[in-house]
Image 1 (cartoon, helix red, strand yellow):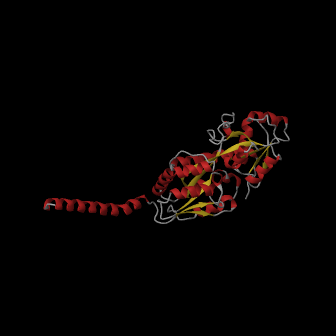
Image 2 (spheres, rainbow, N blue to C red):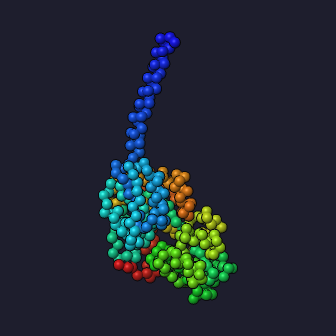
Image 3 (tube, helix red, strand yellow):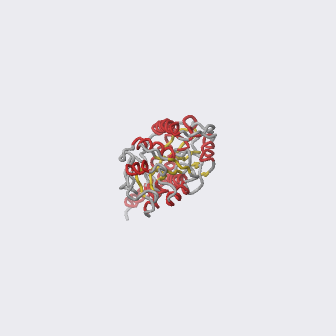
Length: 336
């Protein structure tokens, strides 16, 4: 090999080595630029492991691994989620402690508790809405098999007023007040039966002790698929992929009662706008991943469109106002 060829080979090797060094040095810098927080990120959930909010938090945490040195789910059950939200309210407003919460604790609780330890609009910054859980109205063996629509149920309920009832997971829950709004919308005066949780309400529906039940899709779906229950309508704006033949409230002439239990991420109110925007972008990107979408489908959740923190804040205030009127019309007495 000539001296010229040797020199050319040497130059190419030197150039390749230089490029490798630049890439190696740029790697950590690039990774660091994607990191939003300097300390671990905690997603605080007000319910035990295994529930809807916990499932979503864990699915989201897996897709946010680059946002902080680590991302953990911090379960703080108790008081229907209020303990967790109070903890987030009082945490450092640096974006490292966030709440992943169902809508109920933010939009309905202000109307059912006199001494709520937080003020949703004042104490939290809206970050992102991540999923929704539509409700389904299902009937059990108490109701004749020829009742297949909401209109049929109204006719049956008016003919059997002592049997016209619906169960929910508890007094003061969104399913409870969805039933209030639905009854007004379809012109049916039916009796609400409050249970201490979704499971006992479902058991009594299957056993024929109550006529109907309103619950999130995931609770009812196995029984609907097994033929133990029949679905009359879903509360979401569009039909459910799991129950494509079941009409929405709007399609069943009950659009005023449409409702979903959304799940969203909140930060302490004094968190900087820049940090909130960066977290919003990271969460919206995580929501698009196949792994997160698969988790939604597995849990019978509905996807929600990505929106800005400002749009989410406006939606929260609108929901608080809407539920205020429904709760008042129900005659529900606020608790301490």
